[in-house]
Amino acid sequence: MSEMINQLMNHRSIRTFTDDRLSTEQVRTLVEAAQMASTSSYLQAYSIMGVTDVEKKKALKEISGQNYVEENGHLFVFVADFYRHKRMSDQLGVSIEDYLGATESFLVGTVDATLAAQNLAVAAESMALGICYIGSLRNDMQRVIDILDLPAHVYPLFGMVVGYPADSGSQKERLPFEHIYHENGYDSSHYDEEIQAYDKRIMQYYQERTDGKRADKWSEQVIGMLSGKTRLDVDEVVKNQGFLKQ
Amino acid sequence: MSEMINQLMNHRSIRTFTDDRLSTEQVRTLVEAAQMASTSSYLQAYSIMGVTDVEKKKALKEISGQNYVEENGHLFVFVADFYRHKRMSDQLGVSIEDYLGATESFLVGTVDATLAAQNLAVAAESMALGICYIGSLRNDMQRVIDILDLPAHVYPLFGMVVGYPADSGSQKERLPFEHIYHENGYDSSHYDEEIQAYDKRIMQYYQERTDGKRADKWSEQVIGMLSGKTRLDVDEVVKNQGFLKQ
Image (cartoon, rainbow over all chains, first blue to last red; front, side, top):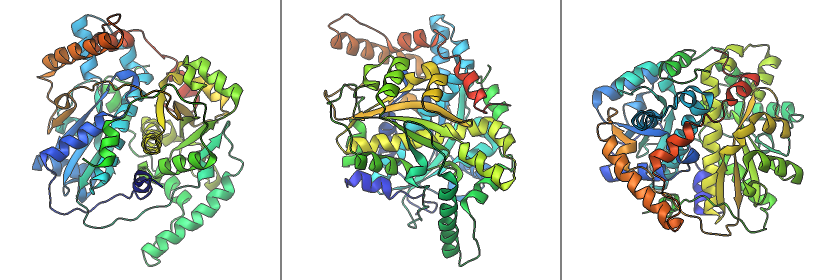
């Protein structure tokens, strides 16, 4: 197994960091590695925000509810970005309004920002840094837009904290290979038994990690969360930014 | 610079492959590496389709218009997938309809599938394989759904061809670091001059690569494409699959 595969297989989210900050050179290397990810039709429809301002970090921590959004080596926020395309189209006198309002552009911006983010994550881990994605910034997407002065045609997707790990994290077992990978056609005939067995293993993991205090099945955990109707306001914010007009 | 950073910085899309197929073990390693990417709230809201059936590959090639969709070492299609969550919620008698119809779930499924895909791409390149993303499968998303028998609450995002490179590809220069990375607030005051200089460099790249036959500026190339109103049907297909009901 290559060193790279080994690194990918050993990924775990890190949520506590030493006080050491990333250097300007480290940040630049990470962003440049992110930029080399594939991009849809060469559009490069994303930007990467770095947040070092203490007050802004504090405000973002309040949105996410996670201390590590304030306490880390560096905080990134990944945004889907068609602002520069809109600006160029205005200058060229060519309308791209139909595209900007279409579901396709929302999909492309989300994909482009995410490809860059995962390259950055992999690059960081190869430098012995730890990372954690911060989806909870979408608890108040409009406030993130205000804090980071994001213009129209830009929306924030998630943050990522990067830093020197202060603990070793722990790895959560994924769904079985056969559950995720389907050849030539989607086959769910084996889903029920796989999820039952997976639920048992995850329950055991939580029991061991919490001295028996917690015993969630994966299925109950995720369905309980999704039934909570979280983040219904994402729709309105994304539309206000100029997307999903179809 | 670490070997990993070096690999990321050397990424280029590969579009011609030798006749060698990936082994079952290679496919499994790639998918398992993909699975270890971060996932939103542990949802694992994606699946990975492998396509080896000759007729299906041919049909997918026709949708994309790219020969390498048929001629490669292995063809993957990445799909956002809430089918298993819907199934579990039905079994538990808990409704997640509001979430499934919300923009948030469309965003999460797209992010989860893309995180996994980029891990797979990085893993493949570490095994001396070449890759190319196939966004052009969205030229006819409904037909991809039919070919791969995708159920409700699943939609295809893009394909990825993987294989043994038959050429060395070429790397396209990205936008300047300062254009993509913004600290503490979005600043577009320097955009016009950066894009003018970038346009000149890209024009030169195309001229050199085509013996002067092609001389696209980046800005004109991408805005020309986006003004063509591509893939307006993605919206209807995604909605038919149970998403974007808000």
